[in-house]
Amino acid sequence: MTTGSRAVGLDVVPKVLELARAEIADAALTDRVELRPMSVADLARRGGIRPRLAAAALHPPPGLRGGLQKLFRAVRPDGWLVAPVMTPPEDADGFERAVRIHAAHLRGGGPVDPAEALLTGAGWIDVGLRPVGPQFVITGRKPTR
Image (cartoon, rainbow, N blue to C red):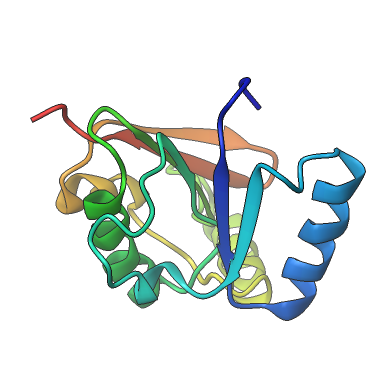
């Protein structure tokens, strides 16, 4: 993490939060990373979290859609969002598509297709979709206004 930066992590799975706490402690970042047992869909307070960078973990698509709009309101102007999503690549054949969709359900997020539309629809700009291992990461920036 950049010197002086702080992060807030949200997740709805207690075991994930437990593992994250251990990783954060091992990295000596407990004073800079706050974990909250909540979904991005539950972000209600405008400005309750004012990050420059928000990382959204795997969420089911309905919660992710609403959560991305709430994160958009919460993130500072010119801030970024990074969210891993499970979506089959465009060139996937039927078998690979089925395997990726099944894996997405097993991991709890469900398939997201097309992922870029989620961010663009919420107001993010400079939207990108990057393959990272068996999943994709969508990124977007909040306009400065």
